[in-house]
Image (cartoon, rainbow, N blue to C red; front, top):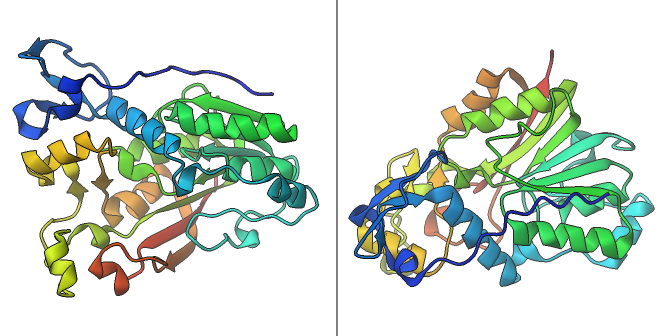
Length: 303
């Protein structure tokens, strides 16, 4: 079954695309916004709306996280040859266990990659994501290959459409950098998991956010600390840098610290049962040549 729950969001106006940073208030609590304008510049900026549209745009560009798996990949998964990812390398199978007939939530994980593979491998899969374009990739694979996949759109911080104890497993690959407060994500994951269920999540090492990204320093092989952790585009970038991100239609980023990432899972009630780190295969910043960029955790709901 494919559940369509699209809330189509059109492109920004020119004024909204060009508007930047401190020339207006940027809010990221995702609740209520003042839509009034002065001189065609929005008074209030909705980060969730922006990131949804930005990811729709990225999906249309067919980036690496927006390329659906092939028919051959699905056929192999149906025969028991499958793998999914939280980091660049495939996830160890013992992190998932036997997924046959298990109810799995792929959270903020659309793009036609993870969810269809798990469905082909025998799981009952729901994929939930903010981007309608990303979800269309999952819908396309499901229709193409005859997969029973539930596809729904929404905010990772609000899983209220799912009743308590809905899932055996939540797969949450790197994506929580697109929300300002991740404690609601962990709390909701705990709520929708069944007793003994597992949350498999990944996120960026907070250290990758601290350095200045000016290519002048990279060319010299220098790491110049500039930003404290936790990092936030809307707090730490200047107006010109925010304006440039908006003009490029890039999502706004929040680099959460380890207290929020791991401490937040523990505060939600999880027990940490697995931990992985991995280097970036193609370092984007000088610091990524020296530290693992990716962190993955496996956490269990004990009661």
